[in-house]
Length: 523
RNA sequence: GUCCCGUUCGUCUAGUCCGGCCUAGGACCCUAGAUUUUCAUUCUAGUAACAGGGGUUCAAAUCCCCUACGGGAUACCA
Image (cartoon, rainbow, N blue to C red; front, side):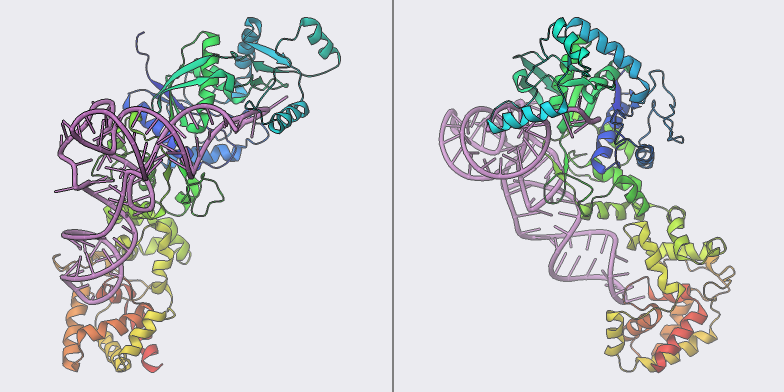
């Protein structure tokens, strides 16, 4: 056979959030499609009408886009209203493909691969209960309607019984499959029952609709969670009955929670993809991290770009065992990415969180200052939503925390230092405090102040100038500089953590520095 | 119950297919140290694993068998 163009798909059902397991499945399909130079299709499996919602659809579309997973064919992103975007094999919503399923079902019915079943859900429940009670090794449909005669069928119809359509499974046949991840596996069909293809109302079920669509959409490879492994066997038989070749299957292990159990919304620390977005996780970092769950980029590298991932990705390299989700490593990776950004990128990407912390309208007028604020915290945050907290001390006089109180207590003389240092600052040409107009004070200065950077020229006191003045003053007062910084930082910022001391003074500006120093000088 | 899959540092993994280069490599976490005005960053060092038991072999993390443990499936969900 001539190798067809590789076509892969991610086929979520819009019945809930896109959690990271689903995102990873999408990613592996996407990466394999890109690696093979193929096409990536997004198909929406919305045949569970009771649970499918437009909201979930939107969440899935947004989640994938956020992670940088784009699709060549499928729903249009902006709509979220079940309209189809590009692609010649649509529609890409299963509920818009009902005629295709009907056609195929008729064909299978006529050929005897499927049959009408009149059993009620109540009867099925009873059958299952009995099988369990008998400790039967087989659980599933008992085949009551498997060989109904036309007369019997007519009788049922006359009684007004509705029917669904079941697929007739071979009674005992060993199906051999070659899974791209699991390798050769044999399954005996005696384990499997005659499963329902089409509901009484005509709406198809997963295993059936999936095959019809994979045929119609010319899907060549299917990467999905291992919970679908046995479905793959059932689907294999449908392809065969329809006279089509089965795609290559790759069943990936599930992502587990920290306890080793299945990932679910209830697990603390496990969020839907959009929650990560809303908390300011860099999408590249999340992408990078989840790609590593069950797959290794190389023996000695964990951080890589999307392109590098695609270039290195081999589906056979995905492991067979489930991986536990480790928040610590995710956070580390987020920090890695944030530190790599240019300051301006970091500022741009932090805007929405800064905006939340600042008074209304303050954002626009203080870009230079905010740039410096962000620069000081770029290597101190792991997710962008930490910014509002980080900048609080610049916006309002802070309460002192425990370490700050300790730092002040440790130096009984420090209250006189506060007053003296405030006096000194008042003589210096310092920029004013936020939200005042700092003029071009922030334009010349690039924080954080680095040892080897050339000193900027500015009409305002730069951090370097502040340092010279402070050191000279401290020496004159016979205060050890090392002793001086701790308590003063505490008075200024309310804590013992943060940017370099003179960057702190510079960012805070004159009034706030003086005010806070004098306040703590008397307390 | 039955069937399928798995098991390398606490975690994610490299190595397993084609046995020797593995006194098992990297990363996160943790610890210690260096740098520093604090924190963070950065750098250095350290702790720590082939699930257990049998085989095959000159040689096994790698091949075979058994056990244990974990996961998945067994729906008119996907």
